[in-house]
Length: 508
Image (tube, rainbow, N blue to C red; front, side, top):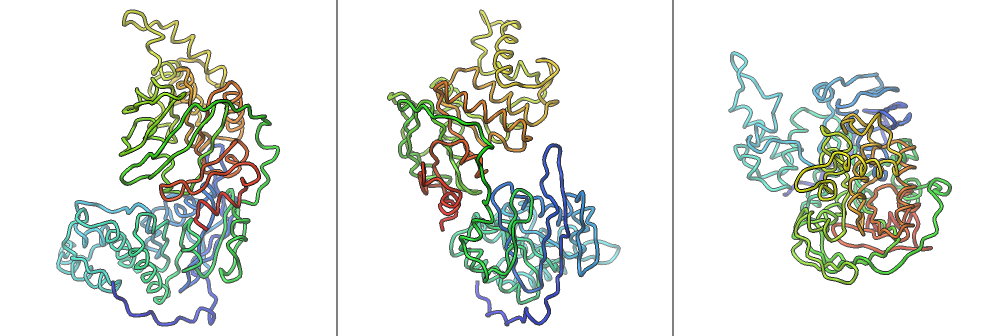
């Protein structure tokens, strides 16, 4: 891609705001996603929105693009209050988003994707295909994209799909362009080309909201920063006036004492040894040990490969290389059944799709992996199913009218307890908890944390994947930090701080 250097734009002559969030609040059942946050976007400038996972960044994007409606506060454009009841209303106001996962249609052509929903019309209101292709070509040339508008999207690579997404943003004459982790799947060459495009958009006077976990990107292209922490505004200002260390402190400036249960780790012998686990696209050279009675945290930013590795360890996907030993004996894991048979169980992040069958009652979900213990001669014994389900749901303090209640009717926290109870009933040696408290209320979080402590005290080995820094610090005996599919650091003791976690995860 070759673009002429963009002309200098005088961003100091007029410090006007194109778009602003003014004390916006958004709540969901049991969770406050945003609490009176404010944000300002300026013409010809990039504002980086920074925060750890769960800070509220995605909620802001959905509010700005008409997917969510704020419960309080207001959106302002050019100083006037506006509402975006739908995504079409946001587009009409000149707000568009380019997501990490391109929201486009593989079977349509490039031109059709660019103008989907607002194609030029000819006589009788029919789409003018010739004009659409010509206009698409003009926009693609503007951003230096050498792409045939007739090409089907499925025949393009990831980088060119991002260019089509940018062309779509320009086709609606957007004044505000939101880039949500736009470089996550790009090569370094493609990232450099994206930077050139960002400068081109700035030169056109567009306001850009740039969301990224990568500090090198933020300091390279951002003019301003806004930091969210736990759904609140933690800081904002000019990027030239802040350091990486100061941004990290704004992101993670919390005291985790008194939040998590007190525990004295009683770490025993090695139970799990993983050596040289590789996957062609998701992770490489993952090696570590895990001990009886230990809680081993795995931390990383979006795309670090943590969940993908855990799924391979549980046999959902196949690694291309690597060895596993359990209690000193080599284990072959080709499927989840193999993993369960070897004493490894996995509580997934997406409990609704991967962890439970929501149309089945609690007792049937809990006993599903343990049918050999609750059946005789091929016939299920209902009394045994209820006994086993009651034993483990009571240990987790699961709240439900009865064990006959369908899991789909439970709260998020109680659904999580069902998934944990299901796997504990198999009497495992190692339990993998992937984001164990994601999306559940504070009370349920406390119950899960307390039970994790009890499991470790009983000698169970726990792997906890978490994006919440306080949870990682408050629950882990040792932490492995992953970055871009590899282990970036192993931290414990005095080395385990919010700053070291973020620095290693972001490659600072």
